[in-house]
Length: 116
Image (cartoon, rainbow, N blue to C red; front, top):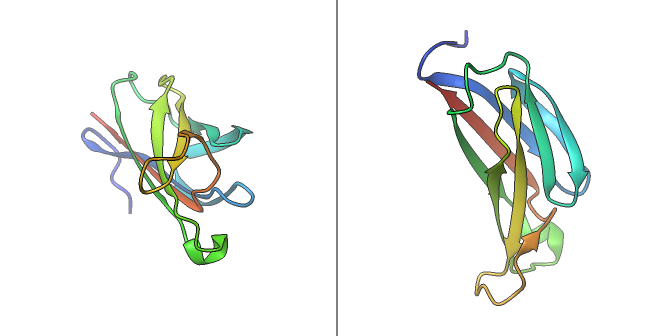
């Protein structure tokens, strides 16, 4: 049973981000929209009371499926509202010598939202 209330996990989402975006599992997430490479919007089933919630994002990649390429990826949050928010997935190589930009190289993206 999930605990729903103050200082609790309000929602979470686990998606495949490569090669085709698809929801793997979720809680209190209505849907997500693929806005283009490395740019998604997620929507809550039940809105938050305000936009002062915390979002944690974890991205992971199986380099064996990408010819051993040297890639780091991360997620950042934008445009938080009571009904959802945007996520940008950025990417560079481990030496940070490649251009940083939106990417679909994160194979798995986990998003957790904690509300007050």
